[in-house]
Image (cartoon, rainbow, N blue to C red; front, side, top):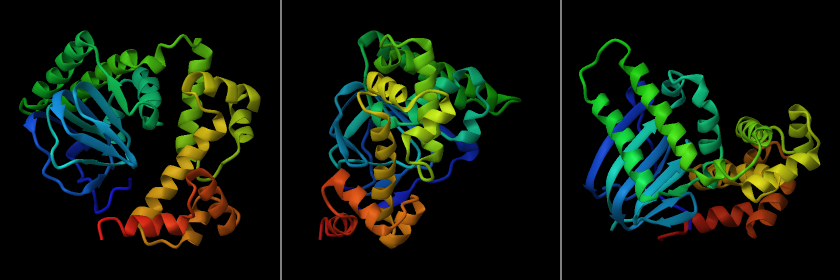
Length: 284
């Protein structure tokens, strides 16, 4: 179900923010399109969280990861305790480079890691790390405070990556690196490059090998992962802008609007125009 009535996330000083939430009831009644990466660490709660067109139940001992560009909305009955953490690329650049792989695999395709259930032990350890970052953020400004907080964020990202089963599922180091690089390349180039062979050539492997390792890591083929990015961006453009379908098709590097329409309908079962019309009519 699409989210109607969207607002853009507000800009943050230094592109970073961490907040403690105690029995927090989100006041917003509209969806929010993110311009930063987001983490919701939920100790306990109820209700639901919609991210793009997926709905997740809130129960506690959960970690939600949202990438910039995604749209989210809590339902009006939601309430939770925990932490809310937001960070952008400007802040992340202060973090040591050794954590880059963790960030890439967690956020370049956040739909694969949207919800991470936490064991009691993992939840306790992660809470301690985020709470340490939170308490540091409350201190008066001092020299290199942003760098210190970025270092804490690095530790949180590494811990999250270790918790995430997708990162410790027995793949060899070479495949991990190739998959992470592929996801990063898609994130940066999906609008201009749609073909698996183009990415495989740049990675120095065959298209067949790239597809096989993607299936082992994510359950989806390389082409499916490229298409997922295209469809997600197409949906957002159709939902939250009045840009004509023709312009969206060219923006996403389709040869003709008909080619784009065929691609969209094949992957969603409806035409771009019907998808937009159905979205506009929600709640009317």
